[in-house]
Amino acid sequence: MNKNHKKAIFVGECMIELNGDISSLGTSNSNMQVNFGGDTYNSAVYFNRLADHKTNTFYCTALSNDNFSKKMILRFKNEKLNCKYVRTDGSTPPGLYSIEIDERGERSFSYWRDQSPSKKIFAGLNGKTLIKDISKADILYYSGITLGILDETQQNQLIEIGHTAITSAFDLNFRNQLHSDKEKYKKLFKQINKSIDVHFVSYDDAKDLFNIKSPLEIFEILNNNKNLVLIRYENNIIFRDKYEEIKTIKVPYGDVVDTTAAGDSFNGAFLALFNNNKNIQIEDNILKSHSITREVIKHKGAIISKEFMPKLN
Image 1: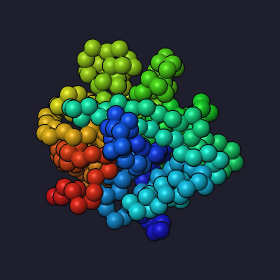
Image 2 (image 1 turned 90 degrees about the vertical axis):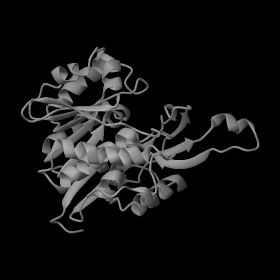
Image 3 (image 1 turned 135 degrees about the horizontal axis):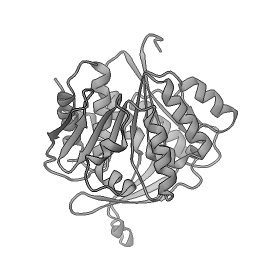
Image 4 (image 1 turned 90 degrees about the horizontal axis):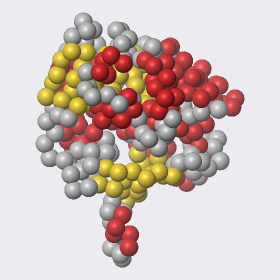
């Protein structure tokens, strides 16, 4: 690895994914498929596919030595993700989730992750070493789901790491299953805001967490003037630029088969294009990143084949 290369680190949990028509399990013609997926992992893949050759993309998580963990690491390597920050000293298999998709492509999830090794990414002596290793990254990306699987000590450690990154990015990704104590998560979110340079926020998530009536209220909550805030709202991306001007970009979705990685793919693409060219116009970045999302949601599953990746000029 070239020490002069930029370092982009995505922190979180990759899980075993069951995808398909669950009702088919009651027949002899089940169409369920087993795969791997997770919000920050999905973003890492799309980031790495689009990042320039002077950037090393790392996935930071905790796994074990079971067969699923080994296959997961092989998948990481197949996507050219650097596995230096993947712990493998856990004693339990990765978490598992299932996705049910309705006729509009919208998803519902079920999770089995209570014993996931990823819940101890920064725990113990190996965790302390990892904290030191991933500090001062060029890009650090994590999400509300990442925080939701960690205990309070590890949450604070990750937030502190965010202060050391050149660019720290965060997706709210509020989930009732992980953040049952909304008041506690609101306080945590305000703490996070002090260290984040790029916020990715779904209005639906923010509405659920903060009980707001308009996406514009998110800018009042995220009142750290140094950060870029991107809000997904219906067929729009609303953002506040460095001059504190609020703008709206139309982003129609077209044909929808599976929205599993709609936000994840956009986030990864946006950060990659920003990483490749710090002077890129935000509007241009949004439209190019959305072209990735439009293609991703035409296919089943979170990660599309590389052959379907749009060319971004």
